[in-house]
Length: 77
Ligand SMILES: Nc1ncnc2c1ncn2[C@@H]1O[C@H](COP(=O)(O)OP(=O)(O)OP(=O)(O)O)[C@@H](O)[C@H]1O
Ligand SMILES: [Mg+2]
Image (tube, rainbow, N blue to C red):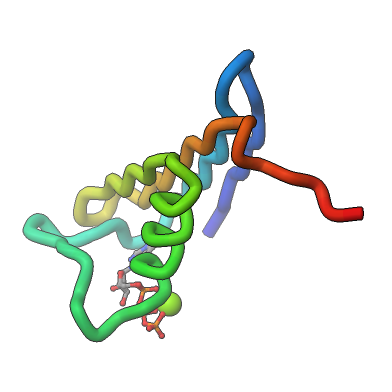
């Protein structure tokens, strides 16, 4: 399996995109109430005023894209 990660920014937002060519997602896939991985990511991104997009089809890999306003990103130190 191959995974491609890109991180970029425009004037307003930071963009993270992760794409894999794995098994993809079932047709009616939804976040499960008992699974915390992607839900945890979603909630943290939302808390930063951003949004998360999860897309996948059966057999066609998964793409996860996150956008976060640069104004909400702080560098420690
Ligand atoms: N890149 C991916 N390719 C295919 N399926 C995925 C991918 N990422 C997540 N999934 C599917 O989404 C489900 C939810 O993922 P998530 O990480 O939220 O929970 P989990 O790993 O099942 O449980 P937890 O993270 O709580 O231990 C996974 O069980 C899997 O079926
Ligand atoms: Mg997980």
